[in-house]
Image 1 (cartoon, rainbow, N blue to C red):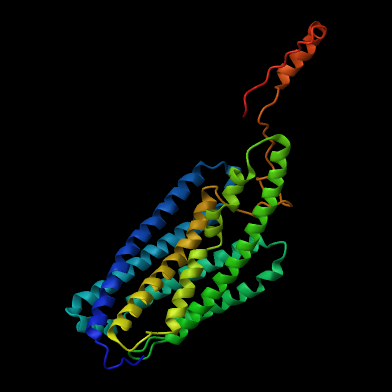
Image 2: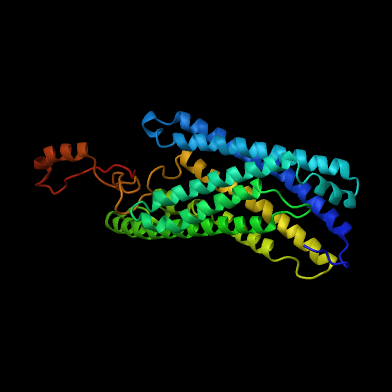
Length: 351
């Protein structure tokens, strides 16, 4: 991208250095979140009965793989950022050092690690989509194709050398577009299924509530666990999709005007959303894994009206009703009281 003469690159570089330094600091906190989810998920897994562990083992392994890769990536980014800042000394020096260390092996290792995280995360999302739509697998053809294409282009962005001073913006833009397309299709498919399942389950639970006088189906705990607003946001990876769309749009557009202020604003925006996209490429699948390992999400197929999910397989709980022992005892003594019309049947408290 040719820089117009009217743009003061010293100001732009100073702003860019500050934003990227802040991103590296926030990434350390992100790595801590991954570590917490992995360790807490493991502790819950170890307390889970053995018969329920089999379907969650793969998620525990993926949790620690993603955590290890993220910590490694953050360490590499911090090392690269420190080297550039240490030798820069000024905004103009930062631009020079940024170009000098562009092809340092640490940067390529970081890019490769991030690519691996994205491939694993998107693969998990496509798999979850398959779990949801296992009854109709042909709908998965488009997201599978874009996933395979994004994997190939992502590897190419790391393997193909960059020309001097010019990053592979075309490849990076194509990769971001393919990843966003995959996430967008997965988001739509999972969201549609969960919303439809919520409506069907709500109708069934509402019918049961009307008949037996139980709690409102809109606040049913098992319904909220699988199809509540938070569950749908996490399972459908909406944050990742939104940040990916914005990031891809910024990559292919550019500054609105040829002024210093426009370039500063564009650089801040693209760095912020690029970081958010990279962060949620790991956080979104890891949050799904966390929900599975802590029993807040399905490990097989989510519940629906025609499945064997545990939402509708639990026994009906009556609000009030006579216990079997009391009814039996009352039936034995009913002949003594039937003449006086004062048959008494005790009731137990609501469950």
